[in-house]
Amino acid sequence: MPHADPRLLQRAEMFAGLPLEELEEVMAAGALRRLSSGERIFAQGDAGVTCHSLLEGRVKIVQTLPDGSQSVLRFIGPGEMYGTVAALMGQPFPADALAVTESLEVRWSVPAFRDLMRRHPEIGVRSTASAGTRLFDLHSRVSELTSERVEQRIARALLRLARKAGRPVDGGLEIDFPITRQDLAEMTGSTLHTVSRTLAAWDGAGLTGSARRRIVVRDVAGLEALAEG
Image (tube, rainbow, N blue to C red; front, side, top):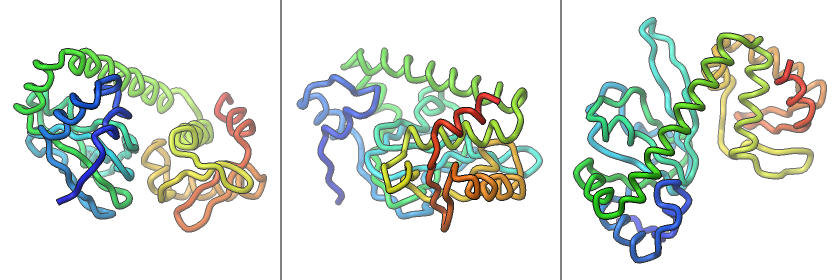
């Protein structure tokens, strides 16, 4: 049976500011689960019956489109919720959730989470704010896909990942989880060939460094200039 410090929940916007005794209550109402790299947490189309918060590791949210192609919607890091909006709305999960690395999550049944929201109204208030943030981010992504050149989209995606999951290494910021060129292609509405060609050029110019599913952003200012067009 996995164990985790309830204070890890404070990294999630919904639970930020709750005192320790309430965090313990929130943790006890859910179930901890260890995830292996590559494990599917839930599948697109599954009934939305659970709310999830990541405590450790990384999770990838992937949607299969009507034509059979896939789109990486986002990467989840520690302190982020996922699957919650669909579950609370009684809707099927709109995408797959896959563990990118060995991870640890806590999940709640919908009745348990609704009960927490009734007993701790601040969770509900913060849940609404979190959903609004996600909607704003989605609108920004759609705008990028329809109005920006592919190089701009790739640069923006790398900058987002570096700011969210970058760790300082010699010569730059390394995205701290494995990410493939195919992942980047799916995130940016591009192709594997275009992403590979672009990264190769940027590696040569010293903007990035990429090898073995690891990417280092070496020149943040240079990528920012490309992102702005």
